[in-house]
Image (cartoon, rainbow, N blue to C red; front, side):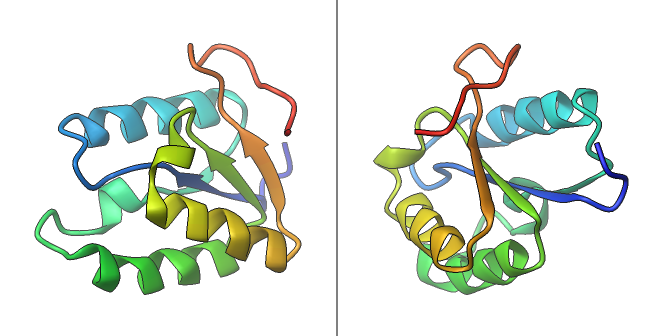
Length: 108
């Protein structure tokens, strides 16, 4: 993997009790894949932030990423759906993390 590639992790946060653990697991997986720079909203955003406040921050992170990785349950999240549309609009590379975090899935 190119050392300069920046990855962003997208997935549900609101209403998910173990979202920090899920995002951390996805981050470890991406590091194993060779990504050194990973933008992880679960590590950046304070727990108390409202989704409408968090989304603009997440969109800025997407703008500064080369590749966006969506967690398996991303489609259940209104915010992640907006992130998906925005990433496609910006023509970012979009990938989907596997359910078991051990191998990559081809994009839909």
